[in-house]
Length: 255
Image 1 (tube, rainbow, N blue to C red):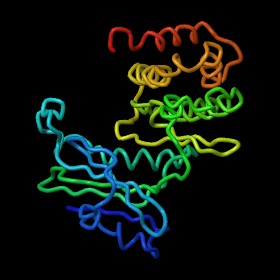
Image 2 (cartoon, rainbow, N blue to C red; image 1 turned 120 degrees about the horizontal axis):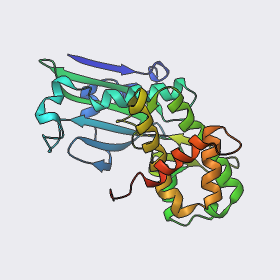
Image 3 (cartoon, helix red, strand yellow; image 1 turned 30 degrees about the vertical axis):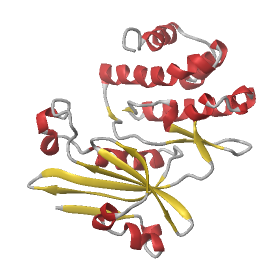
């Protein structure tokens, strides 16, 4: 069984001839961006624009982590989770990459391969790279405030929907070069919906992932302001203090 979907806005364009079906997408050559046992990411230019092609195949080298090989039949494919999450971000008003095409293929009920294509967000850099490069914007308090406020809003929106990103790191946040910067959330194959105590744990993990670099590049007051924006509180409550304690100590003994 094969399922492939091309966004209607690209149906009458040159893009449709390149990404129109899964076979064509898996035959593509392009600039290799990333590669691991599960996924290969290429950057391809079409009609003056660039697109990211993410191709999934197999179950990975670590069969134990892939549920001893059973995940291809029992677990949701990562590629499907990723395109569904991107669509959810759009529905929630979270800026993200435009989904061009996506789909997967199964054989005898088991996942064999899948892919998704997104349009490049021009003139953007991930927040981790901005920090590592000592970009002058990191010394601009006004710029930092605008970026942090948006990240707080994005994170709060996800969590309010019962959703956790599970890899909410600075590298997955793109920032453009606009006078008033826009933050985009990308790459979310492991995000999912949770309830109760499990959601609470995942919320803390998301916030701890953000704070992992935050504590290196932001002042304590900036980090506190971010949390207050996220919680939509003017001052810390007793519950806020408990939550912050969990966030700050989340990675203790894990690194």
